[in-house]
Image (cartoon, rainbow, N blue to C red; front, side, top):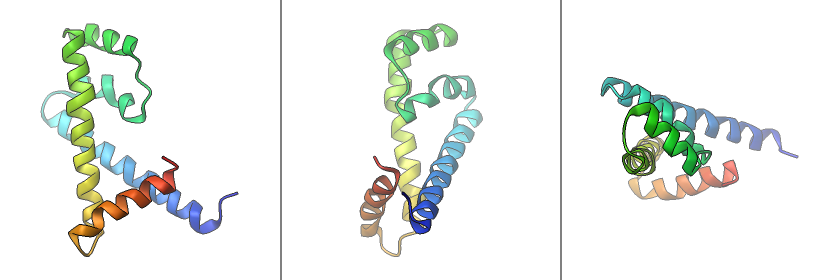
Length: 110
């Protein structure tokens, strides 16, 4: 059972992830790549299978390899970067960012 404090921490962590996802969506939208974002956002939650890459590639009119590169590399890398930026804003010192990220993952049960 979650304590009230742990529940609050979990809700705050989820809100942070939602905020980061919204920022990433905005970036893809501004770059004219909203369709690609919509096709691949589930990969960030680990819900995309290889078959989904092929389906998304067909929707986007790109190769399976290009789809995997977009989703597997670019999207994840930028998401991690934005998450790090958001967490760093809450830290007094830059060196605390990694510790805060580890705590975030503990809170989320990752």
